[in-house]
Every structure is written in C-alpha cells, then in structure tokens.
Length: 421
Image 1 (cartoon, rainbow, N blue to C red):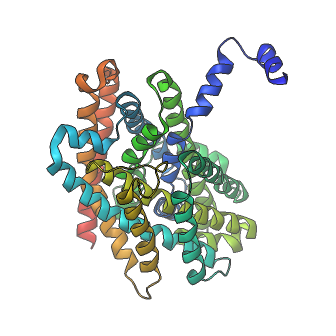
Image 2 (cartoon, rainbow, N blue to C red; image 1 turned 135 degrees about the vertical axis):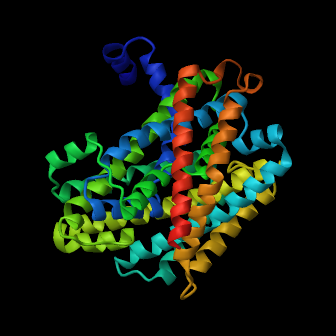
Image 3 (cartoon, rainbow, N blue to C red; image 1 turned 90 degrees about the horizontal axis):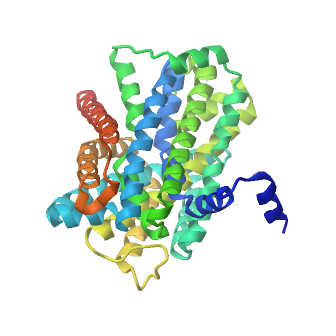
C-alpha cells in the first residue's frame, strides 16, 4: 500500500514500472565493467598515479566512452540473438576460427586467474594472513559460490562485491589531494613522448577492455534471459557499469598521485601502494586500499574462470550455465574447477615466475583483442543476425574509431613489451 502511494505521489506514469524493469535486468553490465578493476587494473592505476600524479586522469574520459561502446554492442547482440558471442562466432565463421580464439583466451585467462589469486595473497598479507591460508580458503569459497549456487544468487553476491569498490573512493578523499590540480588534469590532456610514459599510458588504456569481458557480458545477458523489449534498460546497466569502473580508477590514480607521487615513492604493485599509503595518508587509507584490492582480486578470481568456462563451452557447443547442475554441464563445471584449483595451487609454488606469466597473458590478450573486436562489429552489422538492431551510421563511426584506436594502442603495447623484454 505504501509503495502504491509513493508511486502515485512522486513518480510519473510508467516511471515506476520502468524502474522495476531496470532492477530486474540490472547486473551483467555493472558486474562485467567492475571486474575490469581487477588486481592487474588496480596495479596499473596505482603505478600511473605514483609515477605521474594526476597527469593521466584525462584518459579516463575517452576510455569510459570506449568501454561503454564496446560493452553495449555485446549486450545488444545477447538480447537480440539470445546467443553468446562464442556461439555467434562459431556459427558464422566456423569451428577453426573459434578454436584458435578459444585456445588463446584459455591461456590468457589461466594466467589472469593466477594473477587474481596472487592479489588475494598480497592484500591479506598486509593484514598478516599467510597466503597458505588465504588462497585455499578463497579458492574454496569461489568454487562453492558458483558450483552450488544459482545464477540469481551468484549475481546478487557479485553486485554486492561491486559496491565494495567504494573503499577506493574513500581512500582518495583521505589522501587529501589538490582538487584544483585534479580538475585541471581531468579535462586538460597532457602527453609526453618518453618511453616510460608511453608504457604507462598504454597500460591504462589497455587494461580497460579485454577480450574475455565481451564474452562474459553477452553470456550473462543470455543466461539472465533479458528480452528485446528490455533492451534499453540493459543498455542503461552497461552505461552505469562503465561510469562506475572508471570513477573507481579515477580515485585510485588520485590517491596514489596525492601521496606517492608527491613524496617520490615508486611502486610496482597495488599491494606496494597500499603499504606506502599508511605512513603518509594514515592507516585507514592504507587498509581501505588493501581491502579494496582483496575484494577486487576475489571478485575477479570468481568471474574470470566463470567467463572462460562460458565461452569455451559455447564455442564448442557444450552445455553451459550456472543454473545447470554438474551432470547437465560437466564440461562447464570441470573447466571452471580446473582453472580455480590449478590457478590457486600454482601461486603457492615458491619462486614461481608470476610476473613473466602475467606479461605473457597481457601479450596474448593484446594479440587476440583486435580479432574479437572485428568479429563483433561484423556480427552487429549483419542484418540477418541483428535485424533492425544493427549499428546506426553514427554508432558505427564511433565504434570503428574506438576499435581502430584500441588496435593501434594494442600493437604499440605489444611492440613495447617485446622490445622491453
């Protein structure tokens, strides 16, 4: 009764129903975008702030646009076709192309999964928890969450995890930055031609859009059963997710720029940044930063293997989905279990060259991203597949500019990686 009174007094006709529809479809866009701020992403933004202060804040504006454009295409294809991206690539470009893409993504995501468990270990070691305790417990939690849960339950937990990124926003304020300098650097592009700046610049851009994100988003939209008439609400979910993830990135750079750059403290990982913030910005800023790293790493350690299991099974025509039982989708759950168990165990090996593995996965991601983006644009402009939901001319221009820019930056990043290593 109170809800009906609120609707009549404060909401225009149709607005209440629209809000309910949005709440029902909300999730895939917000979750997928926030996973972008994983251990590797947080490390990249921390290094950017510590090395160059607020200089790279302006990049987050075009990055947000690029992220929303690419993610919206995947959400739209999922809603219209009812099929995952791997499904569509296999059906339209054959098993051979799908096979090579799946193998490359599987290698990259295995390395990324190890990186996420490494982030879990590093963040909790700040709170004096041994990695031999934190990693097995985290791996068990992730496995039970997905294998024993339903899509609806898992999605709710992931949405709650997305909210914990607010710790980075609080850390940004606790660092007491020069807000006038922050505002200037956000809207006035600054660029340097020295090699180290270019590497960090490409890292900030490159960490935003990765191949697996597109597969996971589209698979999530399909499994959630979002219909064409709910498309505009799904698009809003993507837009909100894009803004959320880059607002978090903004405050990570601000926090590290305000404290570490100001005191000429260099860092190599997000855990280094969390530790360094303590003596300068206070214990709360440091602990919030470390907790944010733990949340992001555990969150991504749940999603990455899940995304991999989704698109590999879709690509080969196997049953997939969190709503299915183990006996109904044995390949899906077996692959998910393998990535969790082996990824966690490898991080526990003393002296394992994790940094080299992370570099390799970055290179593989960079090599496969242009192909995935071009497949996406070809599919979304196919009227036989998308009907009236193909890209408009304006959206195609924005999409191709985004794709070409990402490809050029990816190529530059790969060249830099090979030359540097």
